Image (cartoon, rainbow, N blue to C red; front, top):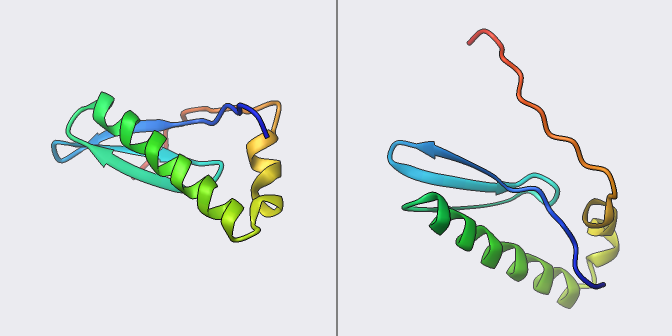
Length: 78
């Protein structure tokens, strides 16, 4: 499959940094933004490895191979 680029979002929540990859709905966390990034990287690799082993790559390939990805922040009333 080669190298792919995925989106990772990181935010702080009660002193812990949450990381999430929205393309494949994988999340992780860490004590710092760098920890959260390293942990999500490992979680994504494990997810892809398991998807291959279970024959599920076809189901997620479109999300993994999307050439154009857009992120945006919006503000809403809460």
